[in-house]
Image 1: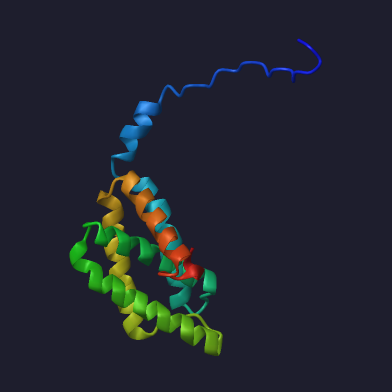
Image 2: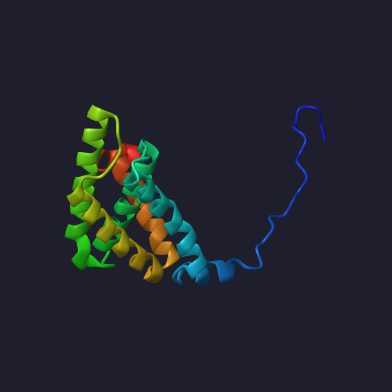
Length: 156
């Protein structure tokens, strides 16, 4: 090789995953009970903290993120009849955020709490039946809406 040419890098073939086919198939199946339980714990703990008066903006954000995912999944046809409940819960989240900015305490009012509880029940049932690939797509849609200003930036 002459001095005017760069030295070549050693050839390293890409590693081919032997489980790539299984990964694709797995994304088409709903999450198993352990996965949905792990995901559900986060927003249920956050909701519980807000109910007990120890809520923070992070807890509120966790709950709202779950509500946004539930809304997108409902719009995709998973529990479509529950869209109004989810939207009412999101309206309650707006009231909660506005009140928290005024008084400094994060907690849902009575109507918002009932709506949020019902919407999270819907979300739990969605997570039990929706394929993983659809959940990933719904999460991407939530982030797209946040970036375009059509959802809470705080709930990213």
